[in-house]
Image (tube, rainbow, N blue to C red):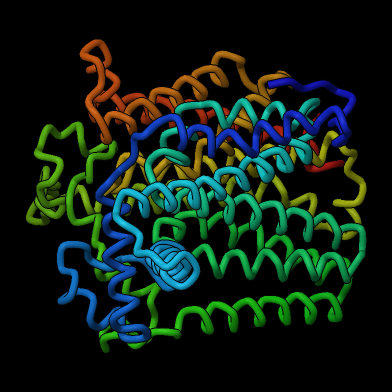
Length: 481
């Protein structure tokens, strides 16, 4: 991935062919490769049936009407999946005068979902530009070519591409808000913060899986809010809280459009967690630490694997609860270390003193932190599916390559991260169609678990080492870029 010390290039006429190629790539992949997860697209079609039949009562009636495809998405996810299929059907019937058959519907949905991957390309290029990659468009295009994106973001046929777009935009918007308030520009800072809040509302109502990005965003949001108050006083804090109240109202507006059973507490977000208790099994064909117990991965994660004894006291340890405890400890470690590292930047005026390279270093460090939170839950928690690390890899790859090129971690670790992403993409492909026998190791859940445990340990150690560098440099809060 091209990078130089002079900073990023600016879009120009010479960039147009690469932009066009990056935008067209997802659609070309869909057109040329007829591989996708038919079960997920069938579920979207069934949810469209429910929306057509029941409208606002879909969450109440769909379980009985289409029991083979439980409705597990919150409201925005339902609209972008079943709602999109319903819109395609209505458009075909009212404009073209014909009913869509299942194969045609699947094709249209696949091209529709490819549009989110095209948006991902633009947002990845934007993030790479903020990181001061020498050729951000090329960096984004190379990411789009990795099996991680081709399989998980384009071919599979779920809303993961939309989720990645939301995470990227929320990350960029919060970063821009923090930088603008550091320069004491209230209006752009407020607008960026509002955009970030709206995107986080959409993310939480898109897929429950996106909730695992929330701890990172709450940390970055706390940094931004502190800076609003520190740099702009009570006026800045009031403006920031107003933006967050608008985002909360937006969340509630989207979350309350459907009638729900009493146990859902009036929230499609909460309803989704009730319908899809993925953590109750060891793994849903994903990879995690608990795969290595050697149990059937579809067996209960609440069955003890050992018992701790201390005199008369004993405690059963289950994969479910132990995994949650380990992930909680990981988050505590990460965010305590992160706070210590950025604490010098919380003083008035310190953020504005950073050079462009130092800002890029800080952004790369935050990207690695976000990637680690995603990698951590895949390794430590039960119930993981094969695609669940999709949101983490772009941040892991862009940040590790950035730090490797600047000498803050080994190039071998950056290469290992890219290789792990490639192998993960092949693993996800194997869940859709048989792989050649020579790849049997790659498709092993235990192999993927071991690979990503090693990756987590190596990246965590590297991130903590970089964080200590941040904390030691009391004049800027970040190491030289």
